[in-house]
Length: 97
Image 1 (tube, rainbow, N blue to C red):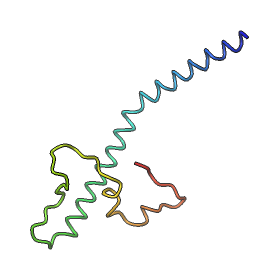
Image 2: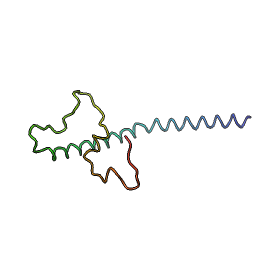
Image 3: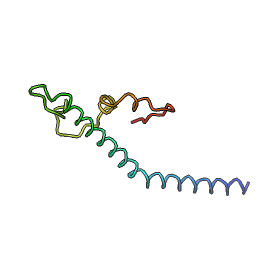
Image 4: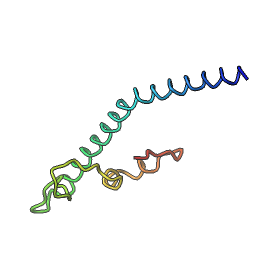
């Protein structure tokens, strides 16, 4: 019985340590995700400017939302202008947002 109690205590300590490690890494992972999103948005704006340069009255990057708040882009907004090779990488792995 005592070994079971000791194992449960040790397991609980390991779970707490794992949780603290996740909490410590979460800002870094979120920052990397935000950088990737902003880089893709910038590339999309450059591509949009090239595509729509001959359309009169077109404002590049104009939001479809009528708000000043940040609205996270949908995956369709991020990947709409991406090359097909980037959407279907070899090996079948793709990033989920």
